[in-house]
Length: 485
Image (cartoon, rainbow, N blue to C red):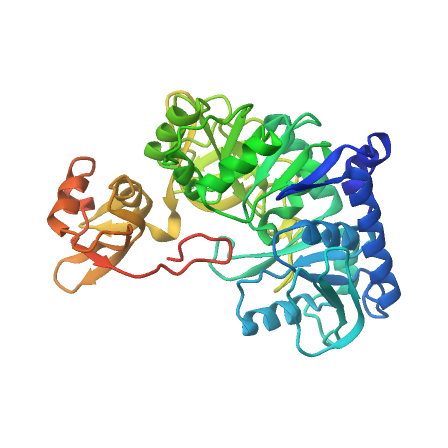
């Protein structure tokens, strides 16, 4: 089972060894090189003792590494060794990293790309890779009680543990098996259509998106263009230099590209996928007008993969996440009855296998195979699904529903607004009112609340217009880059 998730990648390396797998800056690395580098990383782990533990039939190995070639190499090496990959996002605070290590009962941590952690532990190997960086493999002493039965964990043939706030808001370790990851890759690519002729411009954090996205591209034999800069000029330059045909990014990246002033075309672009946050109609229309390719919005969730992707309806309904294809979808109202608007529930291939801590097998969480996402959505007359907001975030304003995401989408159309979070503020006499915390665009020194309120009234019902607009320097984000509510 261990090799199945990498079968496509290894087959490409054997059949077309000189085909480019990775691009960065002015350099490229072939499939042959990447396969050999991953095998070497696996050998390093083996020699260090990171792939074996008396108390763990399947060891967990953390990867603490920024985006880049090294992240890809070490992640593949961990999977090749039969270990379970546990990404350790670099934006986590020290106490959060320690908690992640404790809850996953890590056997070892690979520190690479200039990042080293943990400060304690037995360093089994320090070696300079061919990029001139020092990599460190640190063995840890797993706690005597991991909080779950090792036999139950091993029985899943686990490949990945990734932490997510899930539907409860409590951080959970989501366990994915090799079989589930493989099913997700096949399901997603039936709709994405990535092939060996594609080159994908990559901008998202690998610690959150590697397992399905990067693995999908490598299993399809495509090339992945790694770009560290988030500046539109650099993104467009890399895209044209290496011939990017696909871009997978967030609305933030597409907004910057839509505003890129040079007028340069993007030659060869066939598919642009927006994920990680809600896509506004304004950004979608401006990107389409600028580059001639409609933005395809995808709905990704760690418990289910990429269940919805708006390929067919991207031009006419850019804010939709598409119609169900591989997945079944039902919307449930507050009484639990199927409706045209309600909580989005999904059933399909590659569903998660378990929550790690506290241990809950996926079958005990799913209700007759259905996963309740906690997202509110509606189905339009064409059958497209449009996300309205999180079930937890709905505001009750004078007895009427109000979704913060809807208000935020309107405010982001205003040129003064760079980022926004809408929250509910309680008033003892009048109840809940929406308030907008705004990071203003550079150069906006004296924003006028009346102007913002007028802008909102043109698109929103009166009870949805924020009663206050608060200037803030920054908005707190989750580990995956979403605005924390």
